[in-house]
Length: 257
Image 1 (cartoon, rainbow, N blue to C red):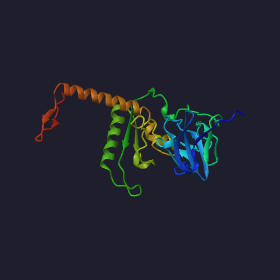
Image 2: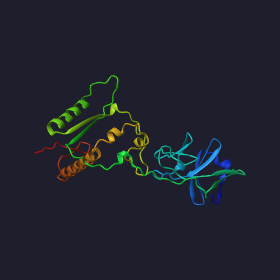
Image 3: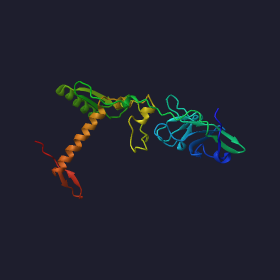
Image 4: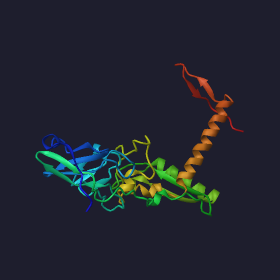
């Protein structure tokens, strides 16, 4: 066994007042936790996106990352069900002082390299035009009412199939079971990540049905690109803009040849 190197990180009486905190020991940033009468220490950097585990919370013996809710065993540093972990360190209390052995980490930081199925490269497969219609109508599943918007969406898909020979699919969000967003976006990216953090963490979440619709992302990107291009063309020509009584601007009817 390698020689131990115990580093004093503070008085036990002071460190018991918070379940999770950041401590430093010879240049190491550690997430020190206190629960059930036991101190534990792991590397303070999440193996997922490098976020601060010392700002996390404790739940069922796990240290939960505050950014994407990855759960690490607070003693071993391992992530249940994932090939990922952070290094864990021996901790002892001696003479009222908390000490961490920085010379003998248990395990090491392991970053998960396996891609989620939704992170595949988007490749347009051979075949007809594919059109996905997504109905956002929400109503009582047991006693649904007639939805005019959903009916119009169906008409549009029927037209795409009959007139354009497209392969169509109707997705009804009301029929799927998925959690609300609840703000699970990436703080580092200041936006949602792909795949959705909830989908990544919860295999039972059915939002993946929408997310994995073939070519949906690429189709949406092309649609937005074309829309932006068209808007730029129209604005560049000064078409379709007129003043409002309150001093604003609005689009006036356009006549398309």
